[in-house]
Image 1 (tube, rainbow, N blue to C red):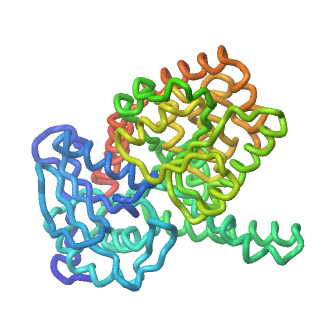
Image 2 (image 1 turned 120 degrees about the vertical axis):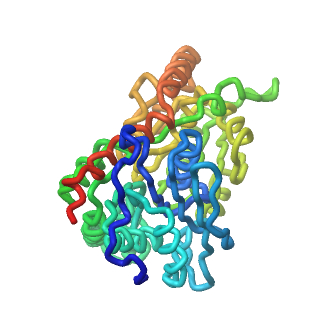
Length: 414
């Protein structure tokens, strides 16, 4: 740890008599920022919110190269590269065990910025070092839970357990999940306040850590994601089933192939899949969905047009903590079919903006929408109406309100 100002708290009281939430100096350490995932998506909007509101905000993140400390308006950024020793966690995510080499630059940035709150998004190399700096400099720590790492660990361990009888493999996966959850809870106990994207996770975190947890959902740009961006060829009468996200085991993408098979067995062939994203399971999915459109990674208006051209959004994941892609689909006027696990179920009003279904119920639910233009039109209108009530500003205003108790004298004992 750096020696300069080692034991001096970097926090300071309100100096202008303004509401403390408008003065909060936040140092934010996201696990990812430029990648295509929920953490990165939220992080980019968080930085933009601070910039638009003129809030003092330091964002320390990983990138492809070093971008020295710089300030634009109220926002200060420091971008540092992951090195050759970094290991892949997924197609666009890596972990750098040698991140400690950046500690002097990060510590200097923290000292110069003098944050009142340090906010991390998980147990990455950035989150781990930021939590140590928060403790070292006596700065209150806030932590967001964005990814169900314990469920991912169980899902990705299945290939190691496949040689066992099913009951033993299931027991092994449960044990791995429990151990991973215990380790995650131990890490999150370092924070004084927690955030999670759905009520079930908030309750779980409060139970496992004993710390208060606030709901921090995600917002939507309803101008970008809109039914108005729908573009379909006049002769294209296919019913388009859409999926957007990482093509990986934990997303349960194998269900897409099962859905196609079951719909075809029901005599329906006037449909095709539209897949947006990338991931390790893409080759498998291409083999099993020969009629699907694979559009790769899309952003901005291209992504918005891809959503608007769908008829039903199919999201079979059991592990997502929120499901930002589901909200984007709803804003585009596309009803969604999701599982009863994780965060997406909190976004879908069953029977109104889509269906909440078990794996074996996905095909019947999709067929029900496919067979009823009236139901599809009603769901599309309800989906759009729901999404219009969500906004990023509301999400981050609540986060700043949750910081406030951390800045009260009793929360910062000397």
